[in-house]
Length: 290
Length: 206
Image 1: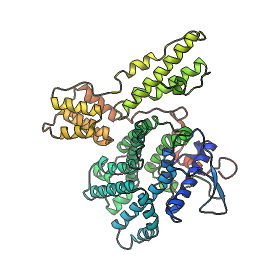
Image 2: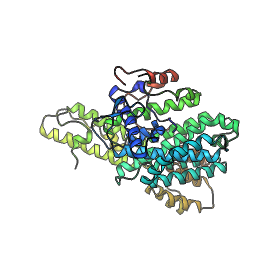
Image 3: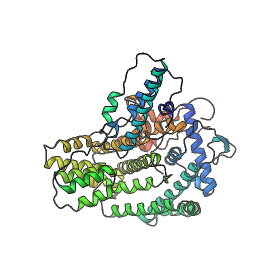
Image 4: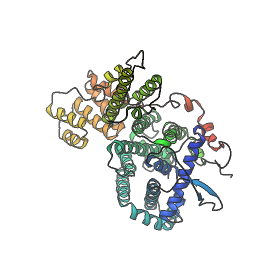
């Protein structure tokens, strides 16, 4: 997806890194199992965070060994199958699919060709995911429609288009009926969605200026944007995410989640502002030269 | 009633010092300053009550057991602080609609508050202030700040509006766990830190 939501590796303890990695691998496996062989193409860090956040509280975690999808000769420790992984897997496919459809609709025939091909390949995966999560499917479609409406109207507000994406992400956590948990999770996801949308807008600012595409920052702050004002409102969303997180009892997943919320997100934010994000985002969190 | 030790996250045989430390840390976490105007303020207040009760219970038990000397009550400050400290819409204006809107916001019924406010034709400072408050509760932080600014512009002497505006110009408050507080990673160079992502943390496949 976007890849903004990731931990800072150097600040993770080894056991927490192992947990993160096992969740990532477990998510890949859940995608393959639930949505077919091509679905792991859409594996991403953002939904790994979601899987970590929505997993029930546990004191410790016991991985199992599973075959790596990318390299079947390798057996990797993975998180055991769980509802949280299945949910993150399917929702990740649904969101990626609708984003693809969006870019097919936005681009002309030739420029939209890669997205068209990819969406053709992933149609089966999407169908399986949407069948299993109809509410999330509907929420994504509705909010993305709302978003493109606001973009067409060149909405001069930051909060309104961000609200559409924030509500989309908020819908990723189905209610468990436990208010003490549901409310903080929903608030956290709302502001995570808001933060992602606005940061993505900042990341696209130069490109959109060149192409003349809609960018909320241009309509709110003028053509040059206003990094100081944007950073302020992003920091406020970060603070609200953390205050919501403090209400949860994440068990053994706490250190990874805290790493993302307190270190990863601010670092990514700064990298986007400084313009070094394009270079950094391609880096893998793990070594690729195994 | 929950076991007071599990509320504070310490074992039964923790020393008095450990209990106090755990209590202080939790009180810092749920402190009303971190939840001012926050949609979760009521939950934080509940948590604060829970840990205060747990701490009081433990200290009482230990005092009765006789094994505890030199007991002090460090909770006083926090207990005072959270009395009403989470709610920020206590003072009321003169317009009856505004009073209702304030009550609705306090009760968490943001939609009705918004509808009611949109029916008011007069756009004075309080109208902008309440519009800002509603925006804030919805998570529309930028529009909240804009509306607070309008409110202050129209009534520069109103302390309530000025306070809200000042808060909207700060980065927001939340609990920082130890190890993440202050400096830390911010002090490092951003790029080098991210490049460190590729360093192996030792051995095996990790």
